[in-house]
Image (tube, rainbow, N blue to C red; front, side):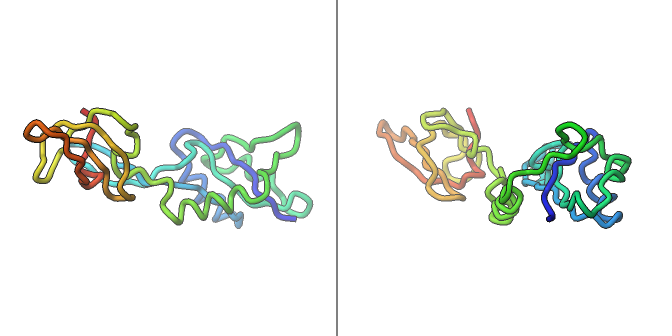
Length: 166
C-alpha cells in the first residue's frame, strides 16, 4: 500500500531534491506558497516551500526500494522511527494539495498578518499616507480601515495590497 513519507532536505535544496527524486521515478510533492520578496528596490511575488527543508514522497515500503532516497542529491534523510520511515497520517497530503490549489497558503499582502486594532498606513490610492486602525477583512482582496477624517471616524474598504503596518 502506497503511503506518504517526509523527506528532510538540505538547506535551500528542496527544489533540487524534488527534481532528483522525480528523475529516479519517485512520486514527490513539495507544498509551496506565494510570498512577496523585496530585493534591489523591487517587490516580486515568489514561490517558497511551505515547510522549509521538507517535502513528501509516496512509497510502498513493502515493494519499493526506498533506500536510494537517502543518497539523493539535496536529501539529508527521511523522517524515521527506528530503521523504517514514519508514514504521514492518511489524508494530510491530499488536504495540503487542496489548500495549496485554493491559494490558502499564499500571503500576497501584509494585511494577512494584521490583527484587529493594529495601526496601519495606507500606501496607495486616494487615502495614501493616512494612518488608521485595522478593522478587519472585507474579503480576500480588501480590508477595512478605520480612518479619522475631518474629526469623524470613517470605516473605509481599501485594497489589501495598499495597507502596511505603521
